[in-house]
Length: 120
Image (cartoon, rainbow, N blue to C red):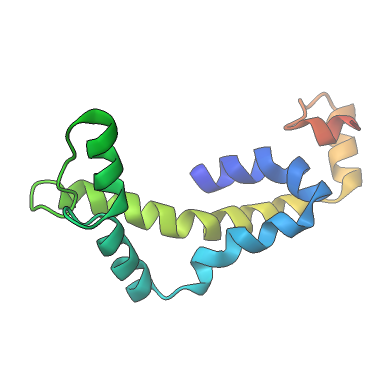
């Protein structure tokens, strides 16, 4: 759902600035083992920047890699890794819809999904 939502709402922006697609593909170019190591370093209780800033701003930081919190940390990391793949997949599918189909839907009374379909 997150990937589809991003694809629909970022479609007008990416249509005007196609160079923004390259940074969105970076997580896809990194192997899953490297993603795991990267987040292990970022979330480490003593040397990770995320716990450091949470402690600096709020006075406490959860141990993300602890047994109690690992159950919630893993889905967040996986979501951050694979959302870009889903986004690019849905974005390309959304862009593949022909203009005449969108125009026919507008004539039939379908509500537009984003400002580009209104001709802005």
